[in-house]
Image (tube, rainbow, N blue to C red; front, top):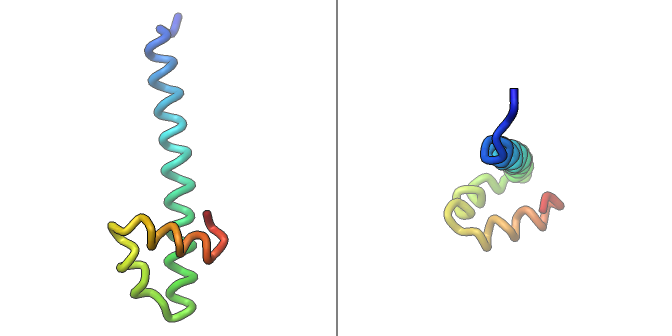
Length: 64
């Protein structure tokens, strides 16, 4: 069966999205665990909706 170019493109895009989502999810879980371990769990809530704060925390913990 032949795959249309648009199907191939759509599948590649979906695969890339899924890979990015999985990596981001894993980093988020790791960050949450480490912040909680350090008694800084409240900072995770501060970072929600604040990309600069989130980026700062990810860099601080070497997850960026």
